[in-house]
Length: 393
Image 1 (cartoon, one colour):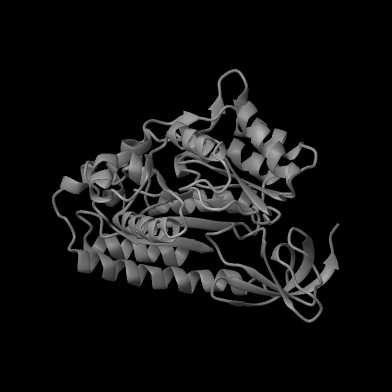
Image 2 (tube, one colour):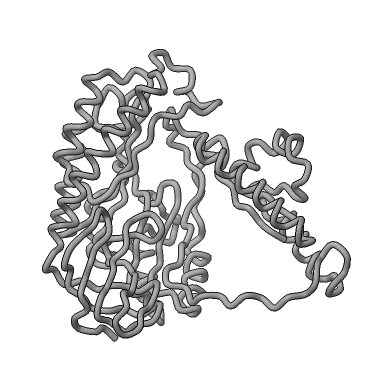
C-alpha cells in the first residue's frame, strides 16, 4: 500500500497533495499495490475527492483506524496473492537523526485567515506520558534530536502535572539523553520569562515564532495581537535569554485591507528584526475562514509582488546572520556522512530539520548520526560551510 499524507492548509499545498495522489496511483497500480490518501485535505474534502478520484482505494482523514485495519488485512494475506504483488524484503531504514514529537494538535485562537480549526478542531494537548513514551522510543532507535511540534506549542500544559518547563526538563533527563531539544511554532503571546528560562536551560538557541505582520491594523484584522514595536521588544527579550539565538518566523503579504503603508511598515520591521530565516506567503483566501469575506481583498498579483519583495528583504537580512557565524565553533549533527576527502552534510543547532538550511563539513570522516565539532568558514544563502575541528563523543 502506498500512503499519501496530504495537507489542506493553503491552495498550493492542496494542489501539491492532489498531484502526489495522482503520482502514487500511477506508481502503485502498476505494481499491484493500493493507494491510501490520508491527512488534512482528506479530512476536509473527503466526499469531493472520492467523487473526483475513484482510483484511490482508501480515503482516511485524521482518524487512522480505517488505514490500520486495511494494513492488517493486507498483512494477513498470502504472499503473492492477487492484488498484493510478490512479497519483497523491506528496505533498509536509515538510522534516525531527528524525531518529531507532537505535543498538541488543533487550535482555538481563530486567526481570521487560518483553516486549521476547521480541519483539526480546537486545541488539545498530548499527554505527558505519551510524549515521553514516544521520546524514549525515538532515542532508543538512535535519534539525537527531539523536535516538539504542534499548532501552538507555547501553551502546552497538563493539569496536575505541569507545563513546558517540566516537560523539557523530563525530556532532557531521559537515558539516553537527547543531544538537542527544539520547539517549533511558539505563538508570540505564549513566550514569557518562564518559558525563556526553560529554553535557555534545556533547548537549542532557536525560536520559531510566527509573527505574521508588523502593522497593528493588519494584525487586528487577522484577529492577532501585537505590532512591530511589541515584536521587537519580544525579540530583544528572546535574545537576552538565548544569546546567539536563531529566530525563525512567518509573514503574510497582501492580507485584506493591507495598504502600501502597512506593507512598508512590514518591510521596515523585517529589516530591523535580524531574523535568521522566515517563510513568506502571499495571502491565500480559504473558504470558511472569516478573512475570505473581508472587504479590501488585495489583488493576487499585488499580493505575490509584495511577497516577493518581502522575501528578498528576508534573504538580505538572513544572509547577514549566517555570515556572522564565520569563525565560530559549531557542533554539527551529521545527516549524510563522508569518507576521507568528502563533504559531510548536517545541521548546526541554529538549523531545524527539513525547513532550514544545512551545514557542509569538510575534513571529517563521519557517519550519519554522529556529532562533529567544526568551525564555520563561510555561508551560501542559508547554508553554512564549516571545517572539522574537535570531535565530540
